[in-house]
Length: 209
Image (cartoon, rainbow, N blue to C red; front, side, top):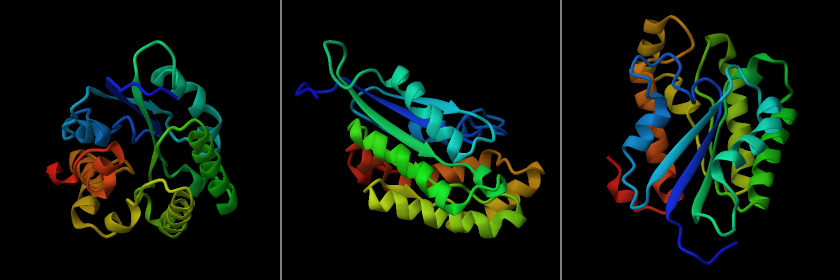
């Protein structure tokens, strides 16, 4: 580690197609909206590392190498970077036959590796999807929240507040798929911004719009 003050903030957001804003006509997704509303005193860059339909097993196997290439080393003679990781968990585990124990372990492995690297992590849970997956997604979200809490990683629950949210349901019915559109991504961004995002970045929370 270094005692130098950071000159920039780099956030890697690893997850599925929702991380990339798939289905958003404006191409912003929730990550673009969150970054646009984050007034950081240091330059802040978010690097989205998305793989469509990815399970936690696949995510846990590939995130580290991909993130390190964007974040750079934790110490050295180069730029001093405040390095952070957002783990945005998708819905693929709900339909892939993975056991709840395996999903928990996959997330635990990601967070433990990040902790070893002194890489602060924030976890965003899966949003509601197909109605037939509701029970499974509720179980996954609760399990992910528990794993995150045990490792003191902030957890953003998307499933509970959005499952019966009128605007979310309307947005999903309009798209005719499990991908949100502008309104849906706006709701996800709002939840991330108001679930400890600024506190996690070390910024005053009273600036949240």
